[in-house]
Amino acid sequence: MRARRIFAGLAVAAAAFAVAGCGGAGGAGSSDLGGAASIAPADSIAFVALDSDVSSAQWDAVDGLLRKFPAHDDLLAKLRATFEKRSKLSWNDDVKPALGSEVDLVALPGKEPQLVGLTQGGDRAKLDALLQKLDKGVATEQIGDWTAFSSSSAALDAVKNATTKLSDNNTYRAAVAKLEGDALVRAYANGTEAQQLLASLGKQTPAAAAVPVAWASAEVVASGDGVRVNGYSHDGSTRGSQPEFRRLPAVPYASSLVDEIPSGALFVADFQVTPGEFQFSTSGPLPAPVQKLLGITPTFLAELDDVLGGETALYVRPGLPIPEVTVVTQPDDVTQAESTLADVLKTLRAAGAGIKAGIDLSSIPVFHKAEGGQLIVSTSQQGIADFTSGGAKLSADPSFKGAEQASGMPAETTGFLYVNLATSLPLIRALGPLVGLKLPPGAGQADLGALKTLTAFGTRAGQDTTFTVFLEVR
Image 1 (spheres, rainbow, N blue to C red):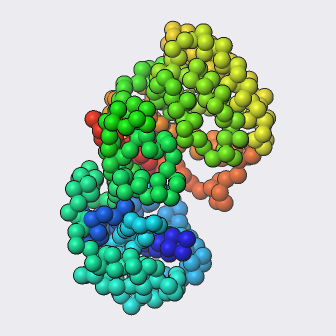
Image 2: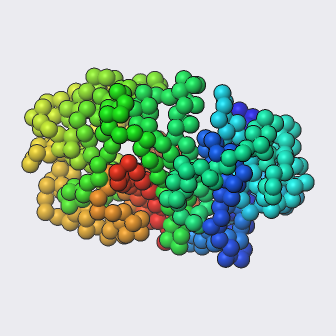
């Protein structure tokens, strides 16, 4: 717990350091981000690199995005003041001189993972002082031109005495080859090492064991029109290589429902449902309190398998007193799906009755219609009528088209999520109090007009899976 607190504090400090320094001269790239991989042991479970060079092109891009918000200067001033108040650290005296051009974190294998931080270019004495203020048990050691720090002397020795390095590990090299050269954050995890650790700790779920991952990597990248998170993973097995491997990987598909969902949707989640999808979920259940709240039981999951199938979409449109919610799906047996729908709705209404809100969620009317092999379920008759009509559709919606282009979403995905922030955020502000939604302090007054859309999607090629989240800021 102590190590987690130390490194969480340092990560926040590094991020705050960079954001508070926005507006400085740009130009220096972060193409060498993750340089401490040449120091980290080859068998490291995970490796995270954070660009803390405020003069880098990436932080210059972040500054450009923040300047699209009218409260840019106030935001940065409040961020710095809040950080100093909560951390009880002096910005100029404690933090700024201590951090170098990047801060890297390494997780080493063992009965319990040991964390080691590495940085270079900062003031060593200031770093030592900062670490002692965070926790007096943290030690530092110079390894080459990097300063390593950890609450475990054994972990420092493991890094210092490593004979093979992470940068030469073929698994690591394959994972980071997917990443862009310029990024704010880069992360890597060795799936095999991580799953072995989870298994030894008794924390690996059957679902995780059924889909082994050889490696995973991710990055956060800022650009002129938004912030992108890219994630990559490589499946470490093929179907049938393990007795417990029961679930087929998601297959990319071209959405047909975008040509049927009405234009003007605030939120759209589109995905494929395969036979037995929810029965598989029983092998890796959610925490008991969450299951109880949502009414999730094996019977309910089996009922969902009857109701949902094929390409399925859940979307939200403006409505009063609350937004309209519609689900469209393509079950194998529409007649059976209609028959089972009543049981599913009964369970959901019971869950809604247990949620405290300004509106009785359990009393919201639900309508449905079966047409053309599809089951349409909506909280309004108009929702069904607009879906089946020939009116304007999502595929021609200017906001959705812009989000597709800005995010780079391909024609075929393994599923996607789209949120029209420009329209939905004002509605949340207006309607949130009616349903008991408490907004963060100041959120009701902040000008967030620069936030346009949020798009997420997945793709897959062979054993490689890619996941992208893009926040559009204009």
